[in-house]
Structures are given as structure tokens and as C-alpha cells.
Image (cartoon, rainbow, N blue to C red; front, side, top):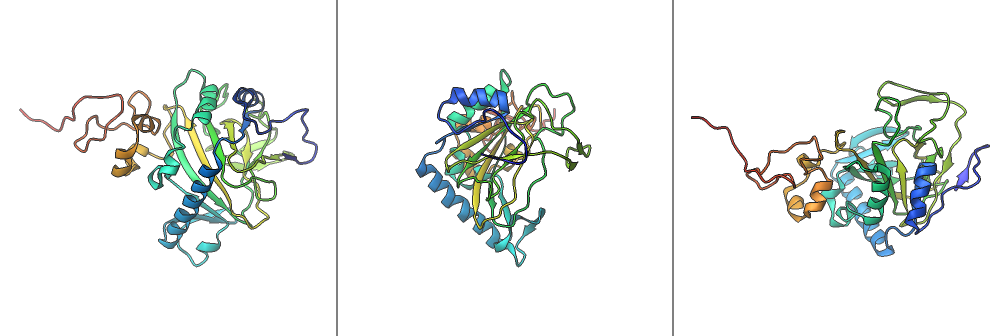
Length: 303
């Protein structure tokens, strides 16, 4: 963990296998680090699949890319040298990603963060970062909600598939800002940061397999990458179901993927009437339905 300027604390979260300590860190600092959350074999399989999928999407002209902080889509001439790539809707792209939907250690921390509230997954996204990627603007992931924000309505996890360091752009945070936002922050009405002054951050660092779990109110942003990389991560974004999912899984999950998922996985992705606003007609003719509804599909009818 590296700090900038005068930002100092008597203690900061360290990677640990003690989930009770992770919960205490989550409450006090707005984040925690789960050591060895993923096995070395799991990390290796995710790394291989993520790199393969990212390359295939670039080859097909379907990649979500960015350079100098400016996003673009498709296959321009510089696709293979882009400093940043998102690989979206991961549940459609491999069982090794779907296994993360119900990752038990992460879900235990999510239950701690949400308390008595129910929650579902908003997105599961791969991130490939290379040298030249610029620092992300500081933000909190529920800044689009009105103040005051006495509790988190979203909570997140970043799985480190490669090592996170200050040099390779590991996420920078301002500890404890989940309850005390930093001063002199100005932002547009939709929550995008316009400017920030005199705000110091520190880099989250950890070995592959570590899970960085954090409160949706924590101010953070990816750091600049100064080394070749790639730095690989999987972002899991959980939210209360009263908010709209950023990926509408009931609409975009492929039929063969839907058939392969467990009922619990479907529910976490929003196929649950009691949870989600992405409503789907119960017992559709193709067999896709909410996990907690068993009414038959009823088409238009006439007397």
C-alpha cells in the first residue's frame, strides 16, 4: 500500500484470510482485502480466458477500448496497442467467469455491506490495462444518487488476476471517504467528476487472487499505468434491486448460458421477481422465467 503526500493512517487494511477482519476494515475504511480469495489454478484459468476473449473481440472488431481516457469501439488500426479494454457481460463468455457470480467469500462481505437489504449483480466485467493508461477520475459508484447517503446502495469487488501495484495503475482510494467525502469536490449533476483539488490518494496493492471489496460510497479511481502489463482484473458490481442493473442480464444472457446456470446464479443476475425491476414475463414460451414465479405465460387473448 503506497501513499501520496501527507495522507497517513495509524493502520490500513492488509490482505487477510480472516473474513471477520475484512468486515471490520470494510466498515471502518470503506474497503477490505481478501487474501487468496481465488486459487492459483482459478487465477490461471481466468487469465487465459480473459486474454483470449479480449483478443478475439479485438479481432472481430467488437472490442470496447480506450486510449488517453477516451473510449472507442471496434477495430481501428491501433486496437492491439490500446492502453485499456473492457470485456463486458462476462457471464456469456465462459464458465470460469460464471463461477464468480456466487463467490462465497465475496458474497459474505457483500451481505455484511448491504445488511438486511437484498441485492443482485449489476455487472461482471473484465479489465485489461496496459502501459499508457491514464488515471481515472476520482468518483464513488453511487454518486448518481441524491445526498445524504447514510448507507451503501451498491458495493463492489475487484478480483486481482495479476498483481496490483502503484506502477501498473492499481486502484487508488481515499480511505474512509465512504462516510466522509473529500473536500472541494465538484461534479456534474450526473455524478461525473469535473475537478478535484488537494485530494491525496493511495494505491491498492496485492498479489494475484486477492479480492478488493469496497463500499459504493468510497472515493476511488484507477491509477495511471507506467509499466507494460497487462494488469488484469474482474470487476463485480452488486446493487440493491430497486436500481437498474448496468447490464440487463434478463435480456442479454444467451439461451445456452441461461440453460447452464443454476437457479441461484439466475437469481443473482436478476431473474427473480422479488428482486429486480428488469421484469420478464413469467413462464415464457422459451422456458426463461423468474426464479420465484411459476405462473404460466399468458399471451394476448380474445373472447
